[in-house]
Length: 147
Image (cartoon, rainbow, N blue to C red):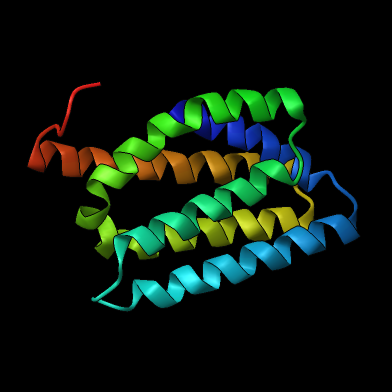
């Protein structure tokens, strides 16, 4: 999780350095995805697969909007490893979705301001938070599967 956080943080840094018009288009897409995540956070009947797809989409927009081919290749080689854990434990952390939505807001605001340092840090913090949330669940439920 921390490795992918650093890779996406680099993409966020690049994204925050784009011109205003390009950043605005990306920010609008990120806001729409995060608004849907926020709506789902308040619904106890939320489908974990829908949350997973939206969250993965949010992060894919970040990376695809600014990363070059090499960073994209590294990202696509490592990202599936994080997705396995998320899918296995998603139903156990749905109640913590609001934390991720708040972290996404910080990412969006940093990009909107054009602040590369803050964008990189906010993305890394989101991945670290995700790792901590999953870690707590794995400690309580035990490891599922072997990698």
